[in-house]
Each structure stands twice: as C-alpha cells, then as structure tokens.
Length: 504
Image (cartoon, rainbow, N blue to C red; front, side, top):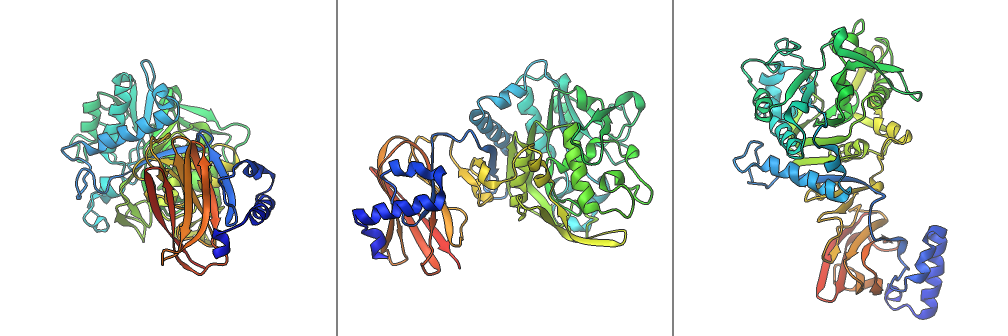
C-alpha cells in the first residue's frame, strides 16, 4: 500500500503503460496529463462541457418549503420548483425549452387520471388522496401550465388532454369535462389558466385521425387518436410516477397508452381497458406486446417535454385495484427533453434498472394461461431504435435532487460551476471500482488522495496542475479489504472529503 503513495519515476512510467493497456487507445491522452497518478485508476475522462449527455433536471421536495411538504402550499412551492427545473434545462440546452413555447405555438399537456374517481375512497390510499398517490396532481399541472403561458403561449392555444374514465367526464364539447362539482380541483386549474380541455376518449369520426407509426413499427402501422394531438406543435407528458402491473412502471412514455380512444382499442375478454395495446388476443403474451405498443405510441406522438410527478406516488401497481398497491413519497419532481432518459431516472427512483432488457413486475402477471414475473423493458426497445438513452452513464442530473437517483452522473449545482467541487462517488457502495468526479472552475494545482479509516494515505490519484473543467476517474479498490475509505480533494483555499464504501 505504501508503494502506491511513494512511486518512483520508473514505477510511474510502468503504471502508465499498464493503465493504457487497461483502457485502450481511447485513453491515450493520459500520457499528456502528468497530474494523474494512475496505479489504481481504471479509466479517466476530462470534459469542458457535457453537451453529449442527455440531461434530466430533478429537485428534492422533501424539505421545501416545510418539513411537512404539501402540494398546495401557501408559498407556491410546486410552481417555484417547476420553474427551477425548466429554467435549469433551458440553460443547459441552449434555450431549447424556451424555443418550445412562444406566441402562436399550440401546446397539448397529457395528464394521467387512470381508473376514474371510483378509487378515491379506497382504503388502500391510506392517508393519501387519489391526486397524491395515483393521478397527476393538479398543482403540478397548474405549475407547468403557468410556465408555458409565461413563456408566451396564448391560453387559448393550450390544451389539457387525457382519456377520462368517469361517465360525467366523457362528454365531448362540454364546458365542464372534469365534472360539475370539480371534486379534485382540475376544473379550477383549467379556469385559472384559461385553457381548453379535450377528452381523448372521444372517438367521433370527425375528431380523430389515423397517424402512421413509420416503417419501423412493432405492432401497429398506424394509431387513431384525437386530432388535437396532431395539430399541437408541442406535446408535454406529465405522469404520476408509479409501478405498473404490466409494464413494470409508469412514467412519461407509459402515459402514452391513454392517447388513443378506449372504444377503438378494446378486444373480446378484455374490454375494461385498451386491451388491443396489451395483446392482440386474450391469450397472447402481454409482457412483450405492451412494451412494443408503447414504442409505437411514441412513434405516432413523440413527447417533447416530460415533467414527472413523484412528490407523492405509489409502489406495487398503477392503481388501488393492484394487489400490492401502496402509496409512498419519493419527494421527486423531475423533467427532461429526452423522455427515454427522463423515464430512466424515474425507473431508477422506483428501484428498477433502466438499462436492463427486462423489468420485474410488482406482482406476477397472469395473462390467459401464462404467468410472468418480468416484462420487456420499453426503455431498452426505444434506446435500440435510437429514440433516446436508457444508459445511466449517458445521463447527467441537474438540480438539488440529484441524490435521489444514485449511479447517475450528477451535476448538482449548475452546468459550469463557479467553484471547486468533489462530487459523491458512484456507485456507492461499490465492488471493486467506483467513479470519482471533481470540477475545477479554473486551472489549479489539485491533490486527490484516498485514505483508510485510520487516516492513513493509501494512494494519490491526482497531483499537479489540472485544467479547468469536469474530471472523472474510475478508481479500483482491488486488493484492499472491504470497508470505508475516504477520498479527499485539496487545492488552494478548498478541501472536501467524500466517504466511499467498498463491499466485496
């Protein structure tokens, strides 16, 4: 161990040659970074910017504006948080969010009110309301709508859309599509925004259109949907973050299932939902067919912006009819312009691996005579089509909620921080290697060392003049005992230490 700390010139040159063999020609630039002490380093990268990464902005609502966080707080916390997220995205993406919304733009916002109001009195909700545990919360909807209107969209060009289950809501052209008593607050949101509402379950021939899914479709060469979804210049998906009994979990892309009229997509023996999207016959494998249908829906109506409500949500299924349904609070509100990347963060928050080929189901799914405990991962299918990324290593997180989704590239302050930073390593715990990220706002002399729990220096990872920008290195604890280690960064006027756990 002492040899790592006191390498002589010959040992250092040997170590560098070993390092190059490990990481290949892509890392050949290490020969011109004399500050890197590479004996325990498996890979290294320096980047001035992160424009090649998909970006998701995320905030932690657990302690804002008060410990007992509520949606409709007097201080307007949700509205502040939504603006915070979308402004972060806009800054990072060179004004791409601002470009979506402006005078003359027509915008459709898809919410998720699954299952109808019959679940509102279910004992499975516990102390939660249906808008907290199951549905897109009206406060989040209103905050997004206010942001869009403030960006320049005329309220008459803004449409709240969903397929409404309650019969009192299924009244195309009605001035009160949410029900005359407005028991859940959505009509009040519509009136506050001064916008329109369209019931996507309206299957009247004059109001629907068949939309091609392109030549690379899975199950449907075209899908029939309301014309408003095609005339809209911008389409925003605001789902509730939940597990799902057939797709693994619900997020912005699973929310797409509700864009086609239910009456046109029912099949025999499965007419309580859009059975045709789940399987072509009552005995087909739902866990492979539904993920493909989700891809086809995205091809017909791509999502421009996803804003995901995971402040309060649920596990075990999409609604109270699911055996393992239980409300929970993830305290997460997040948004992205790449819906695959955004949903991947949602999957991670829900305890799933977005990069896997399949996802576990919250309960075994019985479909006809077959039973499965997993479903194909629609995020992997979309990634394979080049629609977006489900690889956490290619996603950067912005915002104060980056710690809610571990093993993701965090940038918890801003894209180009004005100060030195040593970020939390990830993964953590790790075996045997972990990524250490630090940021240098200007050229500086930096020392980065690893210590054991006794305070003994085990290895110098970086020592010397380091150029401005973000630096990432993969450090291996191979040969060390399991336990706690510390990484300390020091430079002129700055020092910071992170705690790393090595578990074999």
